[in-house]
Image (cartoon, rainbow, N blue to C red):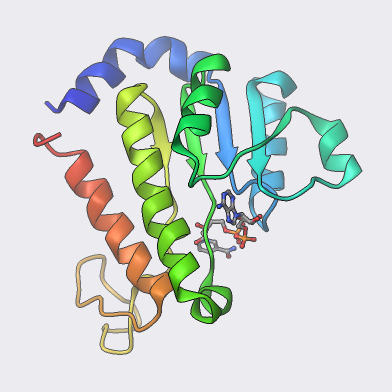
Length: 177
Ligand SMILES: NC(=O)c1ccc[n+]([C@@H]2O[C@H](COP(=O)([O-])OP(=O)(O)OC[C@H]3O[C@@H](n4cnc5c(N)ncnc54)[C@H](O)[C@@H]3O)[C@@H](O)[C@H]2O)c1
């Protein structure tokens, strides 16, 4: 069993019954809806939305919101510690076209940002969710249906960073960590 799994199982009951959730990149397409769903289930104060953008008033009024840049490791750590976070949903990313328009920034947010949350999750025994995407497959991947394990050679920085994320997730959960 990995160090991660060991720590996870010792905190599992409290964490699952009364999670304290931080969502990064929470003002994008997916974050607000997820926050609403989790708040209905676990209570409005249990879910903190975060982003680097100013929230619209209805989002600000709907529950806790904080500024959080996933590239600022120390500040993220402070948020996790001060708010006793147990689950981290990592939504921050530069997606397809935006990433292609700024590859250097996409590399930072999608790869360095991911490493920041992986390290913080390990350090603080968090349950971590990082979504991948269909963009992790490339033109040489088999289609209809694409199997889970197949050639993945995407040609965008977004796709490449997601393949990196998938593999980092696997290796982080293995006995080496
Ligand atoms: N929307 C989809 O259909 C879809 C499909 C598959 C996977 N995903 C994945 O789900 C996640 C969320 O997708 P989305 O559609 O909500 O993305 P989005 O582009 O709508 O939102 C991303 C958010 O990240 C924030 N962000 C950018 N830089 C940041 C930084 N340095 N620190 C903190 N936040 C930062 C942006 O302000 C933005 O609000 C992404 O990882 C994406 O790859 C989304």
